[in-house]
Image 1 (cartoon, rainbow, N blue to C red):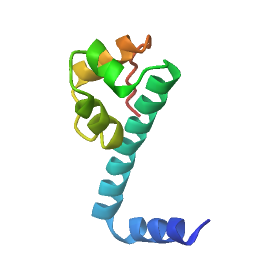
Image 2 (image 1 turned 30 degrees about the horizontal axis):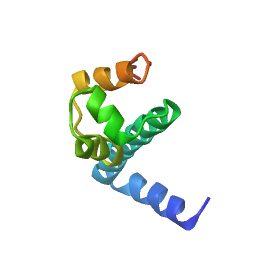
Image 3 (image 1 turned 180 degrees about the vertical axis):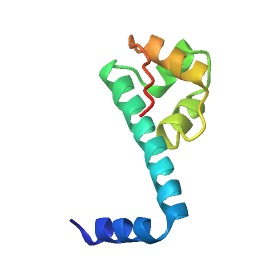
Length: 91
């Protein structure tokens, strides 16, 4: 475990608000990474995906780099454009 990982684990133990915010931020980051990977696997640029779903390249970039607040309908459009199906799980 790296020093950073140790620090995060310790901080999460003693600061519930930090833990909650960290976990939420990580999930948003992870979603952006997954969307970017799916777009690249589909062989599309941000510009091409933006054209398909009728938005701007800057919107795709924002979603991929910090997708904290993205509409479900936008996720559905992206999934469809990439030939994917959107699945939501509650855990």
